[in-house]
Image (tube, rainbow, N blue to C red):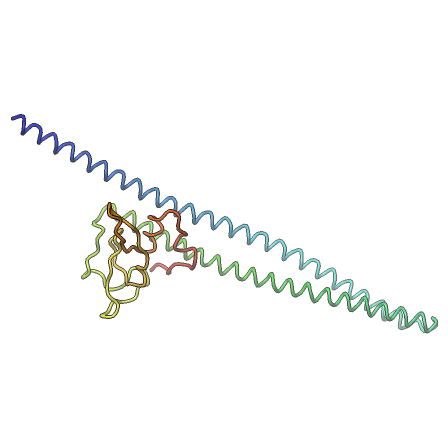
Length: 235
């Protein structure tokens, strides 16, 4: 009778331990989700700051360009006036014309330089807009990834080979040459190219292949997988 009592208590304690392990796993995944979202929000704040500064500098340069073009028009008017002053000594007239040519050349060079700067800044703004589009794609991709991670709490993670026809990363169809590989963390199916990362797991530290998202979540001191290039646009 005491032996049966001990066995029942062991089963109860074992169930409690499994429940605690499930709770810890759920909290760890929630923390990982929050870390990825925090990285995205920080990068978006930096991009908005760059766009604000670039827009202000462009406005200042355009204002300076307008002022210099007005000065150039004024100097051209002075040149016309000097050409009409024929009664002045020829030497003085030549000297003034020379000074005017020098000033006009300097002003034209300055205007050309400003135009070049404005064009360069416009290119930077265009690049910033392209970066912003990449961030939108990144945000959409991360949202899809996070939703998939959250959905795994309500379903079996391991994907079966017969259920998947294309890589979950690059969406390329599988074939004899492109075989199916499982991520050892999330259980999803990828091609070999999209499963290039490995992490050490278990008491014997065996190397296990994982996808980009799981590698970012499992290896804390590594750069996020989206820091080198924007992720694939989600379907």
